[in-house]
Length: 92
Picture 1 (cartoon, rainbow, N blue to C red):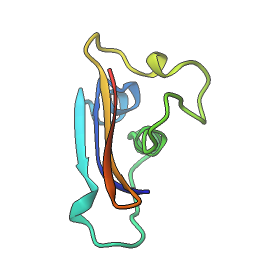
Picture 2: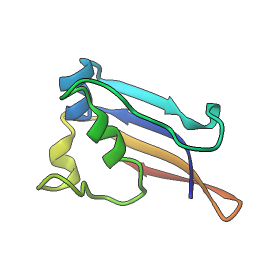
Picture 3: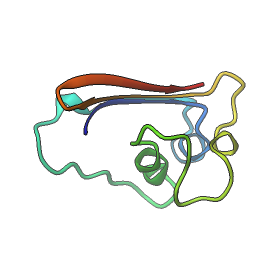
Picture 4: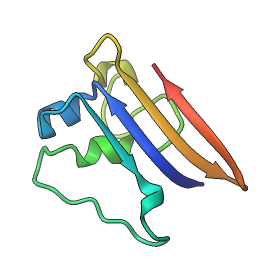
C-alpha cells in the first residue's frame, strides 16, 4: 500500500495540538522512502499516524473512531494505491 493523501476534519488530536479543524497532507509530493513526522508532545503526530490506514478504528487509544472526532461534519479521507489501483477510504 502506498499512501497518497490524508485529509482530516474535526480530529481531536489535531485540534488540541495544531489548533486547526482540518489538515491535508499530500504524501505523493515526497520521494519514495522514509518520511519522518516530527513535533512537540501533543502536536498531533499520533493522530496522523493512527489515521494512515483504511479501517474504522484507532489502535493506540480506547473507544470508537467517532470518539476521536468532535465536529458534526468530521471526516477522514485516505487516498492510497494498492497493486497499481488507487482507492479512497472515506469515513464521515
